[in-house]
Length: 115
Image 1: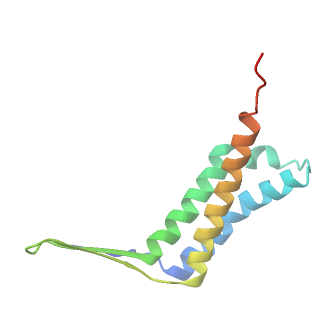
Image 2 (image 1 turned 90 degrees about the vertical axis):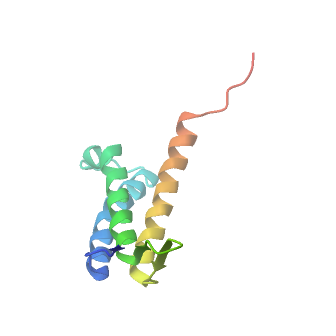
């Protein structure tokens, strides 16, 4: 059994870059303390995390190939294609996710002084 993605790497990279525009816009507007009228919709966690997840999944599927052979012994082959733009989208998405999670952690878990 061989699983190969039918998504072309260049198409996945373009869609990934397009999807990463939303979190980049939100993070940069938040860092600059700008109140953009569109930020209320784009600030939704479902939109932010969803766009990061879809960009990551599209690009991970386009560079990862999995094959399983049920010989004796069974063999599982994983191959990773090193494509610059797909890897760039994956790394950028993970960096943006870490920024968002770091912000959520710092904002919600503040140090409390004991009484």
